[in-house]
Image (cartoon, rainbow, N blue to C red):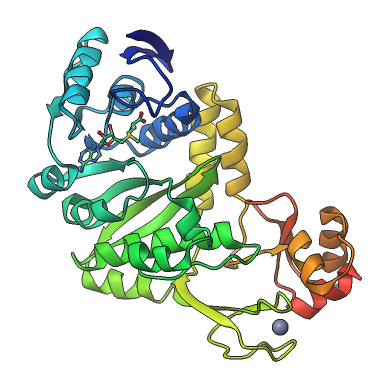
Length: 355
Ligand SMILES: C[S@@+](CC[C@H](N)C(=O)[O-])C[C@H]1O[C@@H](n2cnc3c(N)ncnc32)[C@H](O)[C@@H]1O
Ligand SMILES: [Zn+2]
């Protein structure tokens, strides 16, 4: 056993690389746990569930650093739930510790906040989380099966999340939209819906947070945020809506249907960014601060991708942004990629400014 300190807590973890440990603990996820603590501190749920808890690190931090009154910590692995128990005692904390399949626990209890942090895909837990979460609650979902929804395995994405992914140059943002779409559809079955508040990817994982609202009308309203994105793999053209053929070169497009609304709520992100700052989470603050400045368009133009498709040189991102702004098109750097721009300009205008 090895003692580690993270945030304001101290826990014991098994020795070895994260994948070899008897109970999983990955120090590289500290960034995500810090950010999750800040988010949970801002939202202030009363009853939270760390449904796949491993060492207990998340739930323990939610209890101690975000002051959540009632925290449930669960893991299907018996060794994990024993470790959670001793780590809770080590920090002089009380909580409900369970050793169940997360889907079973979530079917039995209702929560104001549910954290789904599995190995790989969260798909198999979404339905149970949807049935469990209370109205106005918060759900946080991690996915590490990024090769499926980021476009390497479109058919795996279709199987797990109900829509195919596409390797488009904005494939990571599209991947977040695929994940969000699957969550919204699971919640719809329970007359609830999910409004994304903060969504990001980093290293090997994607993470999305959103607020739950109940009611059939709300569900219908949020489904209006779904739409087609058509993409031409010959020239890089893309557009919202169902377009069988590319407007630019006439080739046949590929189309997917996803949540096309906002992934990041500016006010929410600003509150979280402030909380990160007050807690000394500087790197987390900087990322959330960037996310708060997103534009209401579901894809960006990665200048390397466009340059390759059009056989033209790559422009400096800032220069392209300036040129598009000079021709009166609202344009910003993508919050998800330093070499990509989000713009209201049409595709041909982006290409023109690059030539
Ligand atoms: C990625 S780890 C969780 C890491 C932890 N949240 C953290 O931040 O350190 C996933 C955990 O889920 C547990 N697990 C896998 N399938 C499960 C299931 N169906 N129900 C509950 N726990 C499960 C594993 O035992 C493992 O400890
Ligand atoms: Zn084309």
